[in-house]
Amino acid sequence: MPKCRKRRICREPDYVIFQSENGLDDVTTLTVDEYEAIRQIDMEGLSQEECAKKMCVARTTAQLIYNSARKKIAESIVLGKSIRIEGGNYILCDGSPCCENCCKSTQPVNYMQKKGENVMRIAVTYENGEVFQHFGRTENFKIYEVENNKIVSSQVMGSNGIGHGALAGLLSGNQIDVLICGGLGGGAQAALAEAGIEVCSGAEGDADQAVEAYLKGKTTVIAGPSGVGKSSITNRMQKEIQMETGEISKKLKKGKHTTRHSQMIPIDHETYLCDTPGFSSLYTTDMEKEELKNFFPEFHPYEGKCRFLGCIHGKEPGCAVKEALEQGNISKERFENYTMFYEELKEQEKRRY
Image 1 (cartoon, rainbow, N blue to C red):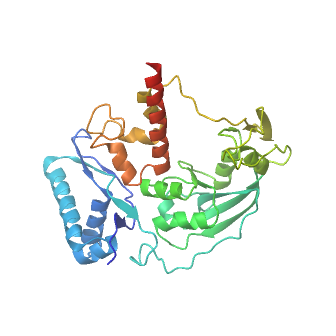
Image 2 (image 1 turned 30 degrees about the vertical axis):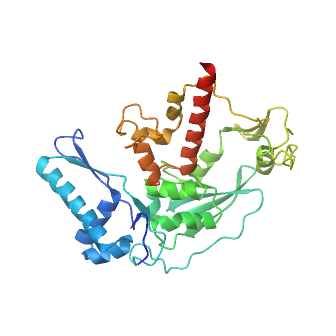
């Protein structure tokens, strides 16, 4: 049996908080992989050996996970503690034939035709004309093709009954740029981020209106270093005004300043795109390094859970943010950006004092 660095689970829990009469002041945390072991052994009736095979771990490891989960549940019942299910060292099933009832990986996967150069694709979890509220259980996606910020076509595509982890691959394979959905778990968020798909969660009601709301009434500023393609993106999103573009310097490996002014371009009613000149460096002279983490909202749920007060999420042991990173709940690229900015602020502080 191949060894996996993370425990494989077939589905994330639908319910994550179980509150006792004593409230949420005293909470036991059950990890998602512990929840999965309980689900498979106690609910599905699998043996520990069968559970181990599905989770891609050794039987002894499955036994340890199961025993830990049972002990936590027993303590909660006896001592009146609430239970929260979160975290853990796991990955969502990628569609491998490990579980016929969950993944249905033998179902054929349909792929759409390659999209046009100037087309953006938006997928919406879909049921009876409305946004379906559970990403992992959606049976259909409604796919919208958008050109010049206007919907030019739409079609409904089945999910083929594949598992949570494989849905991100299905969307990526169909060149989806944006997903609009109701709710989704941390593992699904990480898989979609890895696939480069923007996620707009919390949507509800009519699916067509949700897409229209996403497209309209926005002013988007495109900013970044010279040569990364800001003007090229602007040209692809509209055809009325074509911005000048240039090639990367082969000698300096840097872009040339082709855009020398900021320009607000109307895309639709109350919707604008702003192209800006490139820059060589990002200056954050008015920010203290300790304030940087406040600008990374994905860190917020883990603040206060680190072992040390004032943790900067660097080399400290027991850092909840780094644990979330290892579990795939925080984007690796975003964390690397945080680390890079922190070091820059640290150097600025040295030069200042």
